[in-house]
Length: 93
Image (cartoon, rainbow, N blue to C red; front, top):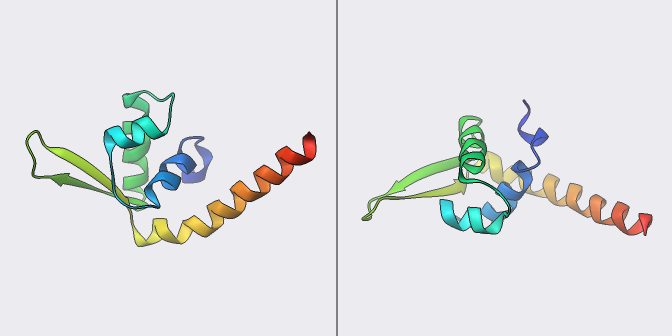
């Protein structure tokens, strides 16, 4: 499945563009989403080189996700897609 084909891929990247985020921060940013689905999506993005996953040496351990340089390159394209979506939505009204 292409990275862009998931309805959750764009929100994940949108919230990561501001900087590294922890799992629960992303989960709160993208309601309603189950932990299982978010975890699957993040793993897929990591395997495709779009995000990195860093385990923080805290107690208990926490995990941060961040965009890779490749993920950063996708931001302008995603912004353009979102902008067109807003225009199309406004035109329907």
